[in-house]
Image (cartoon, rainbow, N blue to C red; front, side):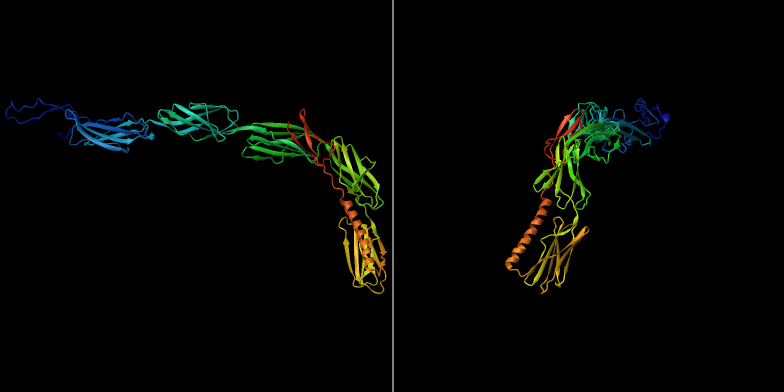
Length: 566
């Protein structure tokens, strides 16, 4: 072993020498060794397994030659994970070999990783070597890239499938998710051109493939396709109770603004459009403030991508509706003039009128054919109804009693009777407005008075006076008063009658009063409002729609029609 070597010893020959005993026997100078001395340690030699595949074992070998077996150099792989084994073997010509290996399972992230081997010699000199791993693996970390995620319908879109793979992906699978269904696209390259974007959300994902396998599907890449408004087919107008109401629905993204135009007038905004986030539908309603015989309604819907509009012309043809009678003055006195007016709405306009005087179930046609009827009224003037006519038909009003006011009149039904020591007087008064009744007596003490008002028409008032019988009955007066006058009557006494006479009298009086009340009740309720319903049919015209009453003989009260946008 030679110590203290320096660089100047490089190239020197050395040989063993033994003190001679005989020159011919102990001369060894022919066995020489040439010294090789350097000032740097040689780099270690590294090698790696030929197959480097994800999931397989990789072995990296690091070797260095030396000439001092008693003090070999040391080898290390730094912080590289794995199982390390070491070997020390003798080579030829006095050289020795130190070999160290490290083995580990290959991962995709090990690709292009640098594995270093460091050698340290006993003299303190060091050297290092390295090898770069080339790990092959199937595609992973796949994603879709496409620039903007909000475009307009009709825009051509270019999507790219980005993946991490070694070797690079050689083919691709593209899919579109729509309405819960996964549909394959006819693209197999890294870039896919999409030209048929559907409105609203379009969801894409891709799969990358190389010789080692295929990736999992990428995460969803959503492209929102916006579009201009489109008014839906269920938009329509309807005619009800003399009013045109138009409703519309339109799909739009982003949300659309709504404008209306009536009969070519200026545009005005919708009242309060509502939007459904689920299907991006905007809805609004326009209603006429009055009745219309014909109207043209335009609905204009617009957003940043364009607009849509629809025009509808509606012509309404139906018999008159809402026919009624008005009275002026409203509170005439008996004998005064009253004007009755027949009111109603017609589409087409009302052309003539008919007046009827009603007696129970019978109606008498009067000669008057204008919209007004003038007459002098009495308390028994009765009830009337009118009909309004146009070319589509006729509609009648309710049977209407004429309101007449007059002073009280005490009816002959009023009387006094004596029965079992008790006096009972009844005073029946016809008046409008209802009169106040006051009794005047001279003999009845501690009397009880009961006023009973007829609830049918508030015209008949019956007042009952009850008291004990005395020897000198005197006279009983019934006094009735309202704002138009007064009346009084001394009631006749029926005294000393038999039970049969009393029964007959009371029966006659009660029956007569019942007939009067029944007549008034029947006269008030006998004629009810005629049913003014009507069936309508639609007749399509060029560029418009006509609503026609189907049966001109019926009397429409609230004609209804459904009108389509055209």
